[in-house]
Length: 160
Ligand SMILES: [Zn+2]
Image (cartoon, rainbow, N blue to C red):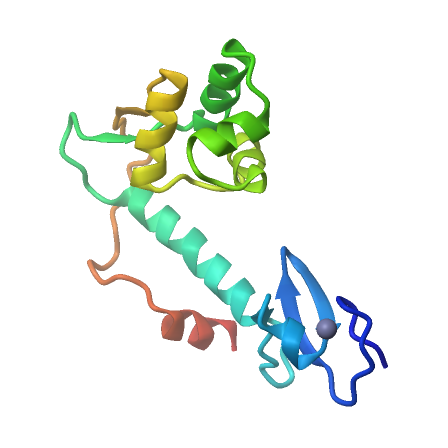
């Protein structure tokens, strides 16, 4: 078979995940992507596990007690970024350059698929002259079960 990236003939392909799609590639190209781990019978990849772990962490942090007045990322951050950018008549590409990120990162931010890091929040706020943080408001009344942070190991145990 041939490498799906460069087209080179390969004997034993590596399965890697590149920009969200799974490809059969040669050794050279596999360096561009993340190797997909085959976890036996389950088709769950390590990436998927990590994503699910990330979601659990988010849910957990929503129930965490926070001091009133503490600032958190606004729930409508994606709209704020998009509006701010459009107000400045910038394309996603322009904004990407301003904050030293890839255009795909901006697209994900505006779709709400990606939460910006603290550092990126600051860059976006100053590039667009907007506020992305707002005072924390208690959304849920549920109490956290344990103070322990979830690990990938916990998740694998649950997935079985
Ligand atoms: Zn290749």
